[in-house]
Image (cartoon, rainbow, N blue to C red; front, side, top):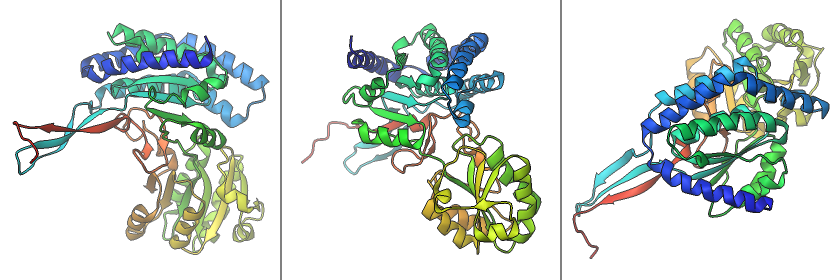
Length: 418
């Protein structure tokens, strides 16, 4: 059987499973989630062994530190996966909700019912935890999903996928509702994202080049998980201690992920006081600093920033720093260079904070909080299938509700159109 025939067979099975999932009750879906959490928990050693083999192969292949970080599983990250699945159980089931129902002058009752998207294709690099997160979100939202993780995470994805499949089947739901593509041949991705009529939507996660390739190649609708050129802007007036804490956390806490800050913008009035302290903290933490001319006058140890630095998602311990005249200049910088992911202001001015929330164009806009909070679990979604930076269908962390759509429902009493 060719790779295309294999993917077609998987997609046809998923399509049949999607009809069953769309009609599944909340109790059955929650049981599947509980089974998934218990099975992953009980097989932690097996999953970590598979992940260790993936990590060893990745190191031998010379994979970057940022990718290694995303590939790594440990006890803490498995507990987070399990916690996310159990949190999904507690979330409302949106399927079947009727919205905006109204009675027309002729007596027709017209509303919108929330329904699953259908069959999703999920393609992602590294991040084996996505296998559990995506499977759980798709089950709770009544969808079927075909998961294709990166070749560097194939052993981890297989181990988690086996747990998921068994857990779903034990809940009386079709095992084909969650299928993991086990071939590492990249052709499988090409085939998956071109299965018109079988796949309803593709959600890719990975680096910019990978996302651009999927967008160019796919013939089915794509919801893009965009790159994260995120900014922290330190305003005037500002609580200096708070600003230092938020800026450092946004960059250093986990630099290899999309919600880590890549550029620091600082109001010219506070720059002479805060930059020596803040940039010293970054240097002590091992961050390479690339600053504008005004930044380097205050902190000469910073390297000169180039134009490309303002638009780069480093996913590494590198930070671009620019001194700006005011908040308007900061917003202008973000409008020019930002990727629409997460933008944070640290300020003591209420009106500045409100203006920031209204005018900054991004999927998540934060006031006096780290960009690292842009995350489905942190936002109370249980987990996320991705963070959409596009504006159609979904924007920001995508949880259960973002994996649904609506259909019009019409109730009549014999009306005909004259």
